[in-house]
Length: 162
Image (cartoon, rainbow, N blue to C red):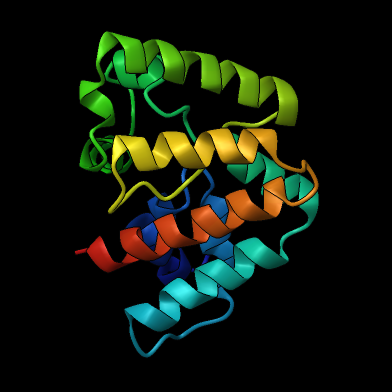
């Protein structure tokens, strides 16, 4: 069976909005066409929320640690780098960087995935506060909370697609 050129073009254009997970855009394509970007972002959100748990966990795990090794090495996607910079995560004090490194390790150890939050519009203090609250909270809702953050990230990325 030959590939659909329109679907391939769609995935090339917006597949990056779901960090390292072009399968999301492929599934969204099946729900279109979309009258506007809001409808497109809503479809992305619906797909990630309806995905089987293992697919959701893979999507969460495709996200980089906040101010982690990839960020420090300059290896983030341009979207992730811009988002982290918008919250000031690229200019942490040495004390805050040590705290973030510990939080990354503690969160991964407890939940088996990176901490994901939509950082746009938040300060470092906001992010650290949410991180510590979620780390201390109940584990059961954490994947759904991360998926909600991913849906918010995707909506912002969809809005920025040229």
